[in-house]
Image (cartoon, rainbow, N blue to C red; front, top):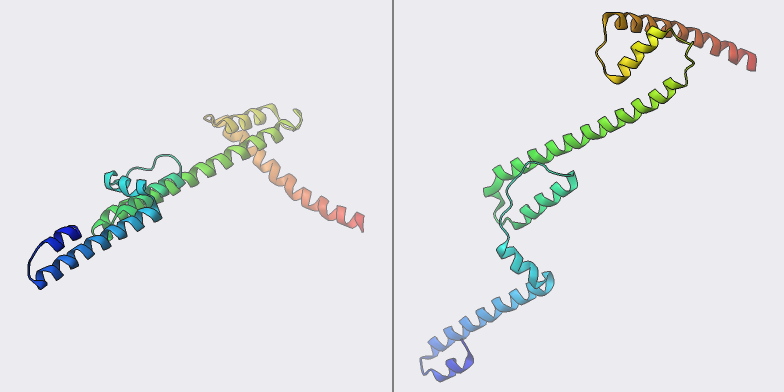
Amino acid sequence: MSMDKLLSKKDSVSEKKELVRDILEEDVEKAKLRRIDELIGKETTEKSKNIKMLEPQEPKGDFLSYIFQFKEWLDQRTYIRGDLDKIATWIRNLYKQLNIEESNLIESECKEEKIKLKEQFKRIPLNFIEEKMRTALLKKFRGAKNTTSDAYYLKKLKGIVQEKLKEATYYEILQRILEM
């Protein structure tokens, strides 16, 4: 309503007061919306009306993008208590995604360590250990299925290594004595 209509009417004073109050309320609402549009930007308020509500989904991509999806969905909610089951689903999916990220990180670290071990293994002279022990170790690196003879040679190599490590401690003691 405009002021012209208000002044042109010849009604009672109480009706005019109600009309003025209605006009003031409308102006206040328009001012609030304008202020919100200025703060947020008009595109976001128009977009928020047209955006469909995101539902919890299986984690796709990286963890951070999934968190932003959850934040977007949560920002659109006005009554969170009614969405507790969906929030629980989002959180379960976030936890699942976190576990996936951790397992990928652990796998990549294991692969890097395995590559380093292979490089170090290549530095060992060929005549340092028996050929059958070497082939058993190579099968273990590759993840191939071990035969009984491979298991035997690996067990034998493990015993030799433990023996040599004991000897190494003795050599360390002797080295410290000689350095005194």
